[in-house]
Length: 208
Ligand code: MN
Image (cartoon, rainbow, N blue to C red; front, side, top):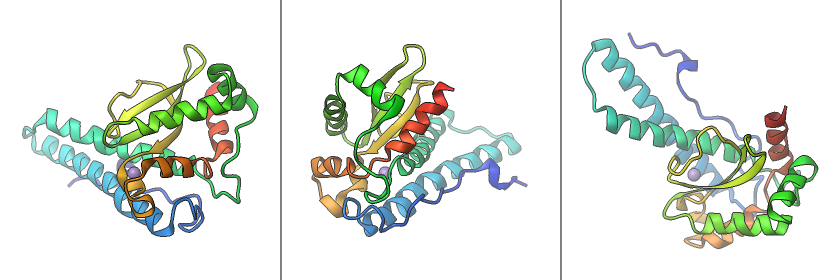
């Protein structure tokens, strides 16, 4: 029998706000489909592969390791990135938007020269991601620098071992209902629902 204990598989996390709460920047319909269909698909996809690995090992049969690991990386990446994304968003009337303060605000100013310059480079990162992917702000513990990361798909061009502070999903599935193909409008809207408090907390955790 394949073990089905919950903690040996991934599960879809609940959003820390309601589906309507990011409006008008992300509509209820867009957020619901994004979370319940798209994110869920990566959870299901990763779990299916884990079950396949369990089964082939139990039966001691071969599998296409290269193709399986490529698919597993994409699906786990999708699950992890979406989980980070929901956490770094907040309703505009409940702390979303504005500017970071504290250590995070200081670190961004020290690295980029100003918050406005950071915002511009992060926006450019999001706008120039080829095809589907993510813009991310990471923290490098060796240099104590916040470093921008442009992820293709969910898992390509990632800096290994860097901690992720903030992500923005630029898969078209993140915005097609609200903005059609206009990624620029979606990226502009994102700044109204960024949860700087949570992102600052992520940095505090790293610096402990
Ligand atoms: Mn997505």
